Length: 170
Length: 90
Image (cartoon, rainbow over all chains, first blue to last red; front, side):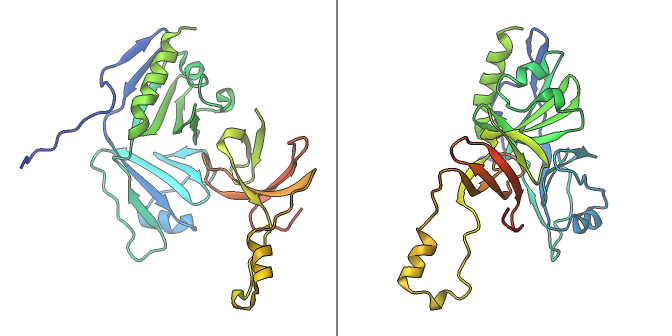
C-alpha cells in the first residue's frame, strides 16, 4: 500500500502566455462553504465581518447568495465548524481549482464566454456565473486581474477553452 | 440575450444563469389527508397555460441559487416584474 499521496493537477502548472493575457493555475488553497440564515451567527463564530451585498468580496470572503458565503484562505487554514450552532460550514478545498487570469486583455478574454458585462463588474466583485456552459465563480481583484474558480472536473475543459480563446489574439 | 432582474442579487443578470421552475403560487394542501383524487389531480398536474401574462417561478441557479417569482408575458417573453418568493402575487 502506498503511504504517500500524490497531487495530480488537472491542467498544466506552467504559466500560459498569450498576447496581453496570462493564465496560471493558482496554488492549492483552503476553501470553505459558509451557510447560515443569520450571517450574525457566522460572524460571531469566525470573528470576521461578512460582506452583506451579494456579489461582493471582503477579507477573502465572497457573498454568493443571501445565506451563502465562500471563504478562501492559504492552504492548511482551519476554522471552527460551529458545532451546535445554526450554521453549516463545509470544507470544499479540493472541490475546485482556481485560475488566475491577468493582463490588459483579461476582461476581454473572459467576456468571450462569460455573459456578465465585465465593464460593470468592478474590482472587489465576485459572482457565481457561467463560462460557456460551465459554472464558475468569477472574482475581480483589479481591472486587469481576475480569479476563476471552477470545479476540478471541469478544469481541463475550461483551461482548453480559455487558452484557445486567448491565443486567437485581439 | 434577455436580462432578468434577480430580486436577491438586485441586479439584471443574463438569462442563461436562470432556470424556469413552473407555475408560481401553487398552494400546497393545508391538510393533505382530506384531499380526494380530484383535488390531488388539480394540485399535482393541472396548470394554467395562459397566452400572455403568466406568474412563474424562476431559479437563479447559476448565481445566488434562489427561487423567486416572476410575471412574464408568454407571447413577447418580456418580464414585467420579479419578486422574492413568499411575497404576494403581483
